[in-house]
Length: 136
Image (cartoon, rainbow, N blue to C red; front, top):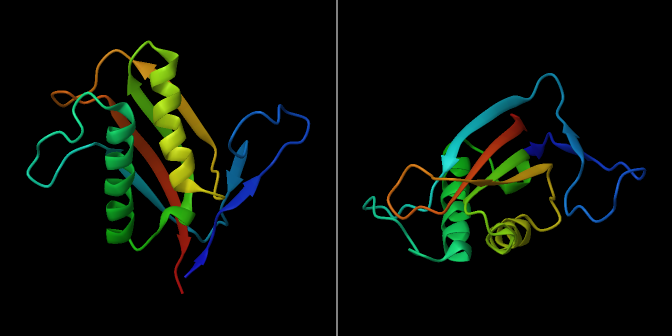
């Protein structure tokens, strides 16, 4: 399967952002809307309690599993939104660094948000995503 995602750089905008500013997919792409990936273990317990980076890693691992079930991979992502239950910018950066490093060169447009609370006990991180694929 060939990736349908085309990342767009805008050289007129700040180069400090660690992601592309936009992305497109062709009209015949199949869009995959993923539920927010949570740091949950298979038994439903929260992974890495109290550890923002550990929870971000668990979210990304779960996101990869969900993508696989939909016939996609991380390189098919067209955007992400990273939610961190914290008002401390260092926590947001810790979560972002895990997401960024997991995505590698496929630096899709992303939004990083601090929120007051997330849905599961002890949950600090959630990663929302959209992917696009062109089926063979």
